[in-house]
Image 1 (cartoon, rainbow, N blue to C red):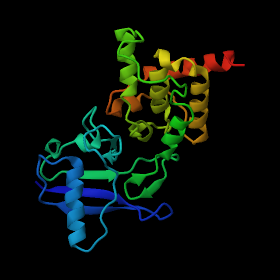
Image 2: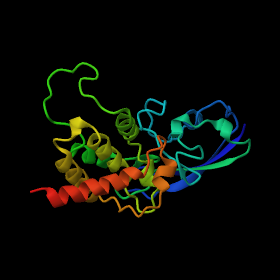
Image 3: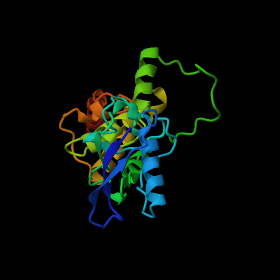
Length: 248
């Protein structure tokens, strides 16, 4: 099948970017979206041109490394599907596809489709962990946790930190990402000792990174490849205000 591409090219963070157009006539419908970009880069390399830079790692929808805006939608048209798990069978012969990087002040472009998402790492480093020494690994079920609670905590823990929520939000808010990291620990007994300090530090770091505020558009939940619920944002807000009011 033939696919016409319009790809954002930007040689470095300070360069003026622009869209460049390419056509591929050897796209197999069974290829993943990233494999299609591999074919594009093989073509560019053979022509002596600079290949398109894009992020990728596991290509199994687990690591959160990949992420591009496809025809205006973060990760493309398939819900709950990361870019690496999107397949070309969802497109028709002759289709045109526009590919852009995540666009947000807190995600500066490094090159082409690659953005710097280290702001997420700094939010996580601000408190998204349990620092208490708990000794060696306990036996399974040593700390009883209700299944409903465990299931909810696991749903939030499924966040892979890809940044699609930021790219889709009109305010470029990182509230869904931060809420998922706060909620997964707030629900579990292991997360209680640092509960107040954690949510204050992570929300304050989110603001310091330049992410916008959440105004309940819900676009983040719509594009999240793991289906993280925006109910986590309400939980994060409750956790934050309770922590502010009760912390000494």
